[in-house]
Length: 619
Image (cartoon, rainbow, N blue to C red):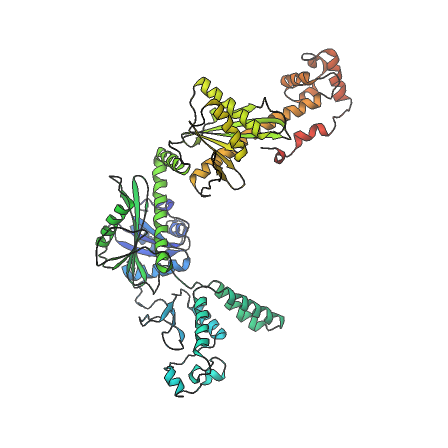
């Protein structure tokens, strides 16, 4: 279709709502579009089987780059697309001639405020709420307000002096019950103000109470079989449920500002820029900066601010940033918002820069896997408070069934990946009964005594599957060997994924999405899988030997000898006396044949362990 590698570009586009931009070979913006799912929408342009018109095919043939901005909702995507089209007027977009695109609900700045909708924002102290992507939704909100709160609709100058002078008379709206008559002092200013405050709550999205009231009215209408009223209420209920009172990308309370956010790694950083003019985002871009001299985030952000403002000829007097910076300019105001509309704009900028950073790093790491390994190990070292990279990690786990067939397993990760040739398991030798602590103590001691004897190198990190008890048992063995200060040891408790350090009273919690925790969980799960597999083999062998011991003249040693030779009870059952005599004497061979051919069966209990669900295995 063209020389543009659209498949590579599509891989970087997320399944999120947002706005996409197409650029041509001359780096001109030729098209802006919105999408509920950015990747699906952009992919549809390059689908050869799609039924597209000639104009679209020409557009696609000219695409040489795709950029995008993610937002929170589909409504925000629509609003951002609208504002960007009006600003840049790309060649292949329908031109939007009307500057009064967005409808707003206004709470007029006057005595006994009126509430109505408008497309024109006047800076007279009035409160504007919106904008609204759906006009029908906006009218449903206004209708709801009118039905719930009787307010005046006239434009009379209702000053206190005029009302007390009796200059006004109530109108038809009062007679119909749509107004309480503040013009004749039938409604107090305080009562009217209370209604306005409740309406502000609704318009700001606090509509739970209103929805519950409407639901009750709807149920009442259904009970009285007034289905026409119920239908009207249901329609309003559905609209109100989907109602969105505020938009991040368009807000009348914010005039002209520049918004910046930064996300950095060891050698690179990314800065996102949002240009807001007249309450609307009109420009957005993210750039990558390569660090040369280990520059701080503050230094990099200062450079980016100067670059972006010069590139886009910005003269905004206010700049929103994520932290304080040292740029000295008396004409500029730097704001670090904590709450409110400006904070929402900063959050949107940070969401975009974080996504851009993740996508770029993923690309680097696919081409250079060693980069991911170094980054992951460095992050683990920081998260786990280590003084060296955990290139070699070992994890211990125990398994037993009601104290029988106890085993321990150790799995090994090197450079963040399983090293299966180094996995080991242990038959517990010194512990009787279900003693998980003593089992852990034995396994750890045997493992590292051998490591020291063979001088194969200690790991940087040891993970113990269990809480404080198992961790303390492991530390006893390490202290006995004199290596407790040479390795970092942590325990992980499965219930809340708590991490315990030796001697610390309180556990440490990592973010559930952190890569460090995911690696630890992988180690823990792999140790459990490896240990359970070995435990089952040992348990099954033990239960089969128990069945053979039920035969007269066959003891434990002979049973194990038979299983070792024949591999299974089935083959022993099928063997004749001559074959059996290769392993046992004549008397024993006859007893085995008689047992299996005579219809005798082992008691059910002898098979119970073998058939037991793995959930009964103690770890």
